[in-house]
Image (spheres, rainbow, N blue to C red):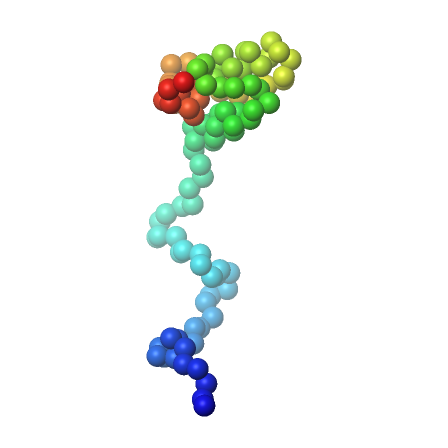
Length: 107
C-alpha cells in the first residue's frame, strides 16, 4: 500500500524566486506615481467621534447629539475628552459629526 494521494499531487511544484530587497510577502506594489495615502483629517476626526460613541463611561448616546452627550458627561464630572468637544465645535452643521452612530435607529 502506497502513500495516500493528496489534491496537491496533481499540481506541478513551482519554486518562487526571491524578490528584490525589502519586498514583503503579501505586500502590494504601489502604482507608478502613486504615493501612499494617509487618512485625511475628516476621517481621523470621525474615528475619534466613533470611539466616543462606543465609550459607555460617558453614558448612553441614543436620542441625543454628540455635543449634548459631551455636555451631559461634563456636568456629571465624567471628564469627556476635550478633543471631542473641539471637533464638534469645528463642524457645527455637519450631521456626520453631530449625530452618533445610532441616530438612524428608532428608540
